[in-house]
Image (cartoon, rainbow, N blue to C red; front, side, top):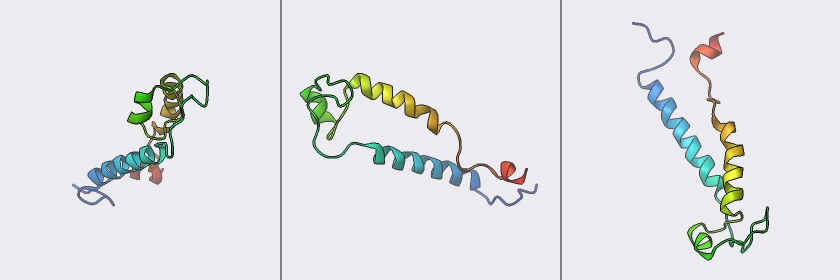
Amino acid sequence: MATGWAGDGAVQDQIDATVKDGIERARRALPKGPSLTHCEECDKPIPVARQKAVPGVRLCVDCQEAADQEEQGAGLYNRRGSKDSQLR
């Protein structure tokens, strides 16, 4: 059966590239530098344990959860597209 322009393993290559992109995006989003003692959004104290666990932390848990919810919608589609969508 003809596979068109896709070579053997093309689907796995696309999956691997998508996972790699996600890991790189997560690493870029990690905070850097010294941790703050108070949240930069709500000024709530950041516990010392969180400061040690997440170097460079800038947000309290509540504000971080809200920020994560906002970002979640952006990564729900495949930016690479598929062969079929490019042919239409």
